Length: 302
Image 1 (cartoon, rainbow, N blue to C red):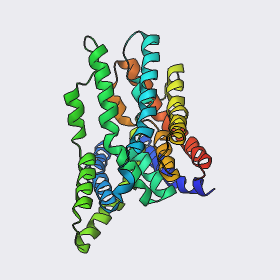
Image 2: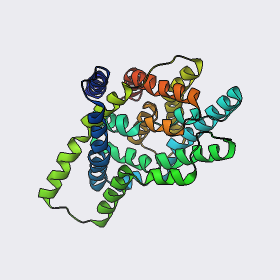
Image 3: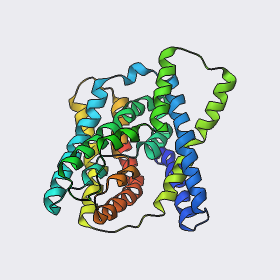
């Protein structure tokens, strides 16, 4: 019950954002403005403040990265291989099954269920999240894509990393390592901006979901189950098999893997069929994660 109560505000705000978008009570330009200020100001400040105060010694562990990204790359490769052979063409479906919405869903869930001190583990993964998975998809696209397929080259991938979220993380780490102290009056403004990040991010996710439509298919079902069940299960098993990771860090990694598919995956869609399937996976995985995330947390003893 504690876990469910902690997740109610997360999915309640997503639902509120969805209703606001579905009923068009928030104009499209207003939703775009909220999205811009959330991801260019509020969320970067939240990441900055969190990493600036974190114990970096907990996060600077190669085991942490290995336990998360070994299963992620395995799911990415196997799903892409299966879908490629099934459809006879390259796809970005492996990315849909392995790329989590760790900013919009992961940060609020970890913060509310476990506590902000556990965000240090999430931040450590977030630094490499887009870099590794987007690069893997770009390499796959570059090798297989033909004609006018929807592929992004490595330069586009590297440019996508130069975004306010990554900059916020890097600045927070630099401040932490420097040992400098921010004046309390200035830090209060930072805290106010950071406090706006989570509710705004969840509303933005709900608003974006209101524009998607669910198209049922076998492929969508396989991808959704792979994202919400297979990926976190592999992370859990990997965390238990590889020594050097404490239970708190393992719990955070499983939560991250169990988060729904991130909307950024749509930047890599390869054709209208992929776009329709991946949009449905984003919608359905977000909806079902309201059930699967509490189950994972109960299994982990959260």
